[in-house]
Length: 399
Image (cartoon, rainbow, N blue to C red; front, side, top):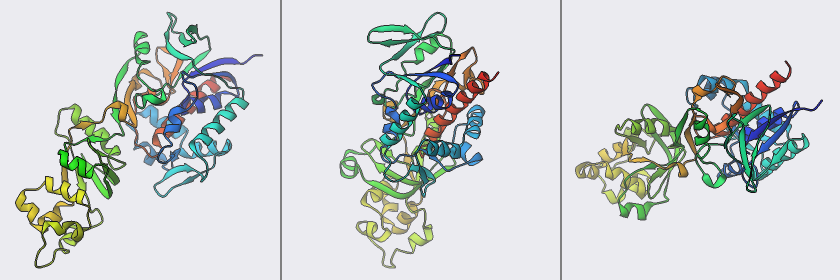
C-alpha cells in the first residue's frame, strides 16, 4: 500500500527535523525555493554554531515568549531530545561553559547540514529545489512556481516552515504573509529581535571608538539584567548582553515610552572597591582609564552621562561606572536583526500547530509569532515545533 503524501515548504531546521520524523510513515516531500537547503542554518553557524542549549524545564521555557503552546512543544521535545537526535544521525555535541551546545570540535555547520540531508535522502525524503511557494488556490491548496511553471501541490497534509523576516540573503522574507492573509489567517508584522540598539553617538566618538568591544559588563533594562559583552558601532551598541533585553526595549518603544539601558562596566566590583582606587591626592581624568582599568571608550561613554563637575570628581566618576544610563533611539531594522517576532499569530493554531480553520495545514518554526534569545534557543524552538507536528501526523496515521 503506497504511503500517504505529506509536503513541507521550506528547507530550514524546523522542516528538516519534521521530515526526518515523518519519513517512516509518510511519503515526504520538501519544497525549497532556493538552490540548496538550510541556508539560514549555515548562516547561524557564523561566530559559533549553537545547536541548542543545556537548559531544561522551567529554565528552558522562561527564556521564550509566554505562549503555552510553544512551552508545551518545548516540554515534548526538549534540548536533551535534540542532542539525542543529533547523536543518532551522527552529529556528536558538547556543552560549552555558557550552557550552549556545540557540535564537537572539527564538525562544521556545513557538515551538520550535509549529514541531515544525507539521512533524509536515505530515508526516502524527496527534495524539490527551486520550487517557490506563491500562494493558495480557491481550495486552499498550495501553489509553487518552478521554471515559470505554476503547480498546484496535492497532498494529505501541508507543513509550512518558511522562516521569519530577517536575513533575506538566506531566502527568508515576509512575502508569504499576503498568501495567508488571503485565506483569512491572521498575521502580525515582523519586528526586530536579537538585534543592535540605536544610540546617538557624536561623529568624533563614532570614528574613534566604532568597533571597540566592551567586555565583562552587565546591562540592565526594565527589571532584566544580563552579563556579557557589547560592541560600539556607528549606530549604537550590539552584542550578547544587549539581545536578551530587546523584547523589553521593543515594548517600551512601541508604547512611545522613554527607552534606555543601564550599563555596569564593573559588575564584579562594588562602588567602594572602585573608589578605594582613588589616591588621597586625587587624580585627573587623563588617568581614569589606567586607575580604574577601563578603556577610553568606556571613559567617554561615562563622561556623556555626567555633569562636568561630576566627571572631574574621581569618586563620583568611579561610582558612575556602575550605573551608566544610555538612552535608546530605536532598534536596528528587521534586515539587520538575527531573528524576528511577528508572523502567524499563535491564536491561529491549535496545540499541535495546525491552523484552526485549515486542519490540513501546519505552521512551524519562525513563521510563528514567538521570541527567544540567541544561544541555541532559536534553533531549539524550530526543532521542537517541527517534532510536535510530525508526532501529531504520525499518531493520526495509527488511527
